[in-house]
Length: 153
Image (cartoon, rainbow, N blue to C red; front, side, top):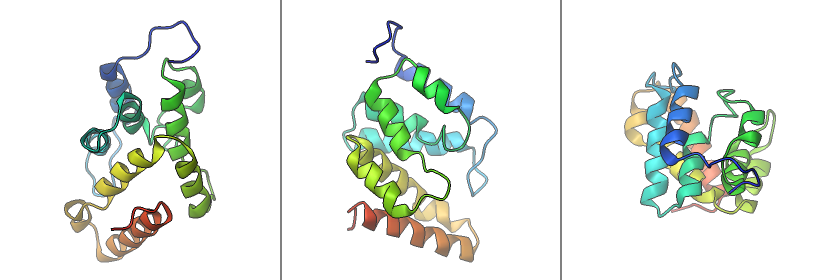
């Protein structure tokens, strides 16, 4: 765990924090954002992810979406590995996809979380409710990221 002496957040506390941070947010299809977080966490679990990766799955968009400040993440009673994965998955403004993919690949444990995220983002049922142009743009975006990460097939 972190170098702090605080009691680590439990899995239930991580989930509750993520849900609260994203409360009121919706995805591109208008669904509650917490459904995406739950699906990514379940996808990580189904792929054999460990507790650090599952915690990171719940928090993977929190900093990027300004749901939680990076300072909260730095100070949170989470493992350094969980924090590293969340930061690796946090896209920076104007960052090229290649740099984003390289950071994910260089961070132990991050690829599995991103794989689960992309799988849910590219779910045909989720995409089906979007307009044709958005569906096409996102399908291409997710396929490109999968290729950059070596997740083809």
